[in-house]
Length: 335
Image (cartoon, rainbow, N blue to C red; front, side):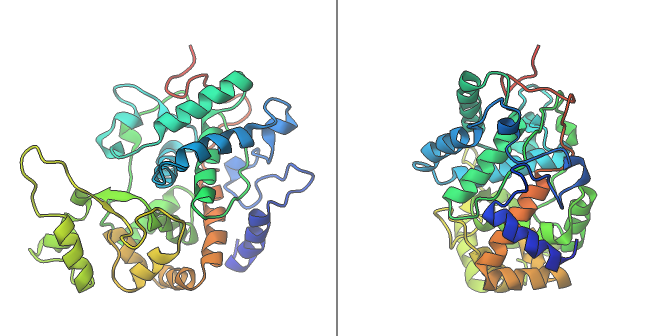
């Protein structure tokens, strides 16, 4: 679908327009075709699922603004590994959650709380995969972002494997990052937009030490990094920490410490102030530069694209119909 066609869809997404109340997931990945709006209301299994989820997310967000980036990151970690099947939520010694690459993921407790609330009101009806998609949307909304329609009807996967995790490196080139997104069924617009989630949240210093001290094994910092940003980040992230000292956490977007939905991330990229190398790389691709410039200039354009790309990601390799199951506890497969 061409960009100009996408914007007409974004308008519908932002306004929540549907056809007959159950608009199919038009424009999303093919496997999401059976997802619809108001799935639980249409099937009379949990008509008020969305207000229930939004209420629980709002209770947590009121006291912890970092829940927004945590939920976005958790949804990304689920959908981009084995599709949106809630496999990231499963406990176990060799599950995705147990992988060292999954360290730093959060908001599991909130998802469990929402599941408990829904089980009390609508037993055995709502999948953990749908809960995660709804919760991420609501956290985006509370942070000042768009409240877009979430197409529902996902079911939960039966397996989770730590070996499946293949997240891109924080220092990956834009070409390699694009290849990764395309391998998942997403496009360059999705890549440039979803990386914009780094507008909020935090990251370990270990993910940027190469840019600060030994870029491409030169023994020098990344020459593209703006000087005051380099100084600030070096003050936050020493080259080594003492034995027993924790790996410091820093804001992905130092200009947005309160985790608001903002387009300032793209201005940081344009002025060589991005924290992660993978983010700074958006400046060097033709299409990614154009998108970065557009989003830096218009938060409304960014909101529209973000809504659509989150919907596209939420439709990757979903299980529907009789595939998978509706877990009664998001942490384990039903007996």
